[in-house]
Amino acid sequence: METYDLITRNAEEVVTDEEVRELAADPDGKRAYVGYEPSGVLHLGHLLTANKLIDLQEAGMEVVILLADVHAYLNGKGTFEEIRETAEQMKAQFVAYGLDEDNTEFVYGSAFQLDEEYTLDLHELELSTTLNRSQRAMAEIQGDETAKVSHVVYPLMQTLDIEYLDLDLAVGGLDQRKVHMLAREELPELGYDVRPALHTPIVADLTSGEGKMSSSEGVTISMEDSTDDLEEKVNSAFCPPTRDPEGDLENPVLELFEFHVFPRFDEIVVERPDEYGGDLTYDDYESLAADLESGELHPADAKGTLATYLDELIAPGREKLRELRA
Ligand code: NAL
Image (cartoon, rainbow, N blue to C red):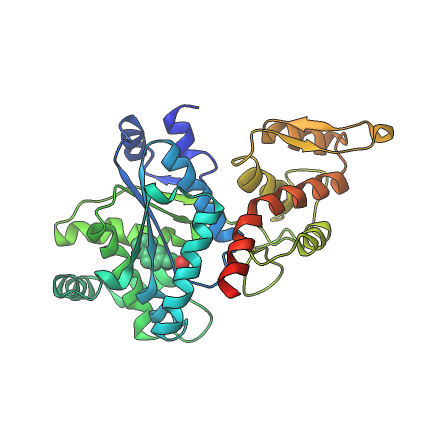
């Protein structure tokens, strides 16, 4: 695959395409990063950006994972000690999932975000950004509770991190786009360079195909799920025989094949008894989606196969979690 195609596959948005093309022309040693608020158990949302990091490593880029402990604290996720502990577990699960440990730099936010120079830059950003602008940037990240002052500081720190970690590409889910847009506007105010951003899609809710899969509501798939949990969750998923259901609906089963399974496996085998036509083999998402639409592939078989491959993807992380908790 061409480097540009590898860097941008399954991306919902790149900002800007021209800047990312420039990176793709000379990716060696360029630094891409994703930040995560530490949480004890990884879910598919984390793994979607992790898949992108694996693509970027394959393209020759260096990958930085920010364990955003100060951000999690500002977003009301617990005491500093609690957050630190979950960050260590998070790191172990990423490595188990397949991020090359020798080629991935894990950085704690608190390792540099409490320095004097950083703090003074932060205050300068606070001066140059309106309250309204910062609140809008934070809207999709913050929970439902009333906004605190910490919630408007948060996106300004995320902006500064892009400079302080010396990054060439910011990666995140689509929910991070407003922060990255704020960063593109505000970094030049401090005399720093604008960086390109790449956003991964948000997967639809598994049972309804509506809205987004979320850990706070509805069904989510995580590193903790047993093989049986996975089968049960996937079997009850919404899976009409089309990739484009009506209205605002999505087909979450196809989305999981597209964003989670095909990027990590060269070949997908749907096992079927001979009397139902025998096994089906796919080496790309398009042919699987086409077979579901034509009726050649039954939704029940698609689901069973999806559960099997997801199980294989999360098994090493699940084992790691078990070890850590033992
Ligand atoms: C992502 C997060 C926090 C800090 C960051 C700094 C630089 C780049 C990305 C970062 C976490 C993210 C979330 N805002 O919602 O999980």
